[in-house]
Image 1 (tube, rainbow, N blue to C red):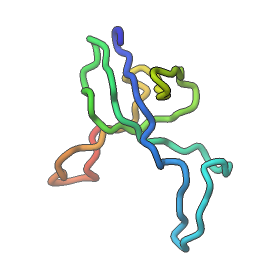
Image 2 (cartoon, rainbow, N blue to C red; image 1 turned 135 degrees about the vertical axis):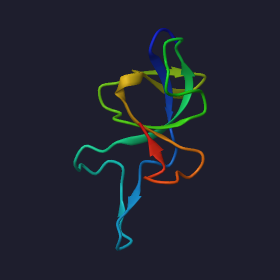
Image 3 (cartoon, rainbow, N blue to C red; image 1 turned 180 degrees about the vertical axis):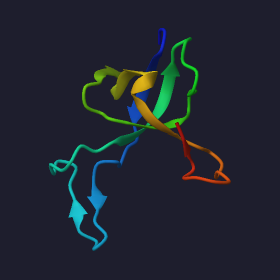
Length: 98
């Protein structure tokens, strides 16, 4: 990856959801815009906040998609990421940092 680009693979199983009542909502159901979790597989040399292996939250629309060895990846700028999951629970807050 070059500059501030991040290569992300969408976490499998993030498509279907369950409502609080237990109803399965398929990934194809149209709802409000929904952010997606993914795993970072590559970073450019100007990326400061994330590293390979981090779990990140992003908007999957308007990203560039490509395929390598039958796996689909997305390429985006670091500024397009909304959050990074922390490995350890935070003392205060949600366990996510921006």
